[in-house]
Image (tube, rainbow, N blue to C red; front, side):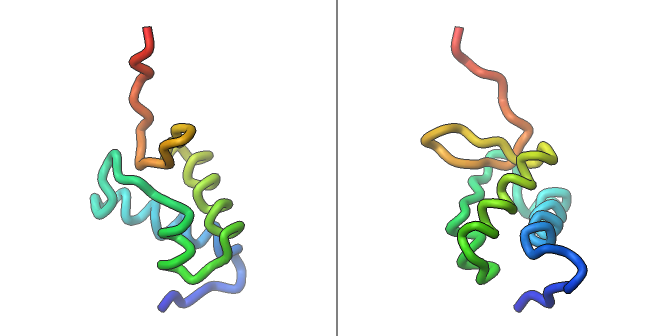
Length: 81
């Protein structure tokens, strides 16, 4: 059970938790992070999960590939030539 703080939005708290998991190696580069995973694990609404993924992306912690999903970064270079 998460002990939510009142002074930060939940999506920001989720970003901090996932950032910690990435920095400790619990979440390795290339691991998929889904909104569904976040909604189920943290018991939050879909919009909160979407904001958390966007926050992770804005901080360069994950990258999103259209039609594939979001993954722990850094983003690999495009292979298209």
